[in-house]
Length: 336
Image (cartoon, rainbow, N blue to C red; front, side):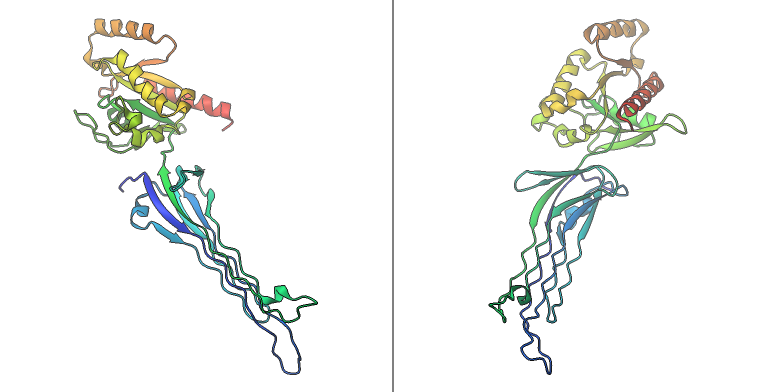
């Protein structure tokens, strides 16, 4: 299925039904008085999170949604039926904002969670409502109110435990393919990853976690350069980040440049643990490995460092088990 992580839709809540102007008319009942009923309320519009969905692609082709209107009132003080609410299923992880005002409306992160996005119009009053001791035969009614109409921006953010961060061609897709059943595109040129990809890492029959791979970052990504800006939101939901670094791509200076792009996009990333993972060490000789490891430890003494080969698998199991243990400890602290 094609992955689409943004869509703009228009939702319209139902309008309220009008009040009825009616008088009681029965044989042998003189001056029966007003008996016009109220209208029904218009239906509301809700977005509902659904685990079975993983894309917003359907909204690209059907962007308009409308809830049912309330029915008008009738004689004999009969109230019109209220319009049914409209429930629109969206993938878990969908952020919702108003396209015209940029107001943040809500965030749907749990299955079956509901978010009210448009309120139905209130019903109108029938003439029975206006009867009084001084007005025995009112001819006044009110019309139902129009329902709310809004243009919404939907943004799907992947729900992953850990995210892969790094420059283009750092080996993120190779690592994801090695540790999971995901099959991202792998090639020897930059930007082979054009859309986010999720993979499930299974440590044993009882322990697993989800990793997300996004397109590589370059300097200026937070301002729209490359593909990073479009997909950085997916990393914002992760509990940990693995920063993959190509040992042959000016690694020690490239690290700060990439992580500065991350912080420029959102200060929230300062709260997310980031491990440094140096990839392609299988291409280094033993002496160069030792020298490189010492330089990395000196440059980043406070960081957790790992040295792997995503192609040969060297060091990958150690990394994945350490990551799984860290995620379990964090979940225990959060009470999950």
